[in-house]
Image (cartoon, rainbow, N blue to C red):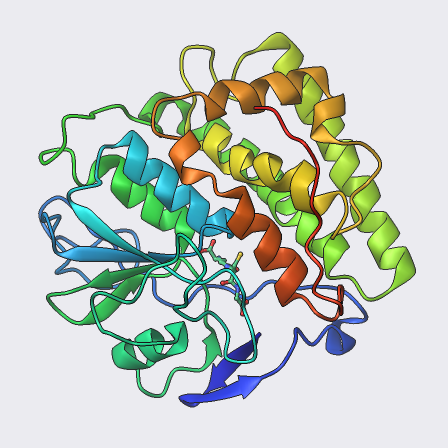
Length: 317
Ligand SMILES: N[C@@H](CCC(=O)N[C@@H](CS)C(=O)NCC(=O)O)C(=O)O
């Protein structure tokens, strides 16, 4: 784990000392948008027109943020339109690398061996964290975006002329409600597990876990009345954003991040919700528990210095 400073790699764990033991997530820096006609999106520059074979996703199967983009690629049937490289789940001194873990791939686009070299290919003096997902543009040889919440919005609508899957996971009439629940789920659940797991102070950890489980209780109540977070007909973006954290929860967050007040399996409605989404065509193939468990338990040596990856738990989705 580390980061780039003025284009030079530094091997360094998250510095929670400067924030009193608290984990604070950095903002993503590449914020352009692919659009149907190449016009600029809500941020960044224009020129990124939706085209088949032009864009490439760099992901880790372990990462909940990257997982969102893989799910949208499957739901929107973009498998033949956007290509993918998968990093090795074992993140060592040089950050994400391409390696030989089963299911990982090489970098078929640039032939790099480390993800930070992809960032440097886009911006030689880059300073910041080197995160997945990354949406790469073959034409301009640059990074369009490294912000998953925006990449899934592009996938939802920009490629509609090229794909048979026209479903809209961010429909205009539901946007305000989706945005509201996204903010709650992001702060308390998606990022909430990291706030608990990466805390280096007992009371900050304990507060983070209580906040996380309060939020899970609230979502459980909501799902006791409705099949999905927003509306009843079909999942929206909000559901998929919650799903990628819940599917990892019992396998890694309960043990490794000490989010152990309850398991998702103990919540009747959250458990059924995960199962419902997991069984959506194309989604199970995006879930790789071997990458998920290996990544967290092997890579975070400040939390698990032996790098032993647990054998269980037995999970049923
Ligand atoms: N805001 C980013 C966050 C992505 C992120 O934090 N990814 C993690 C993996 S789960 C990562 O690559 N971390 C590497 C690091 O922080 O050095 C997004 O949602 O796209």
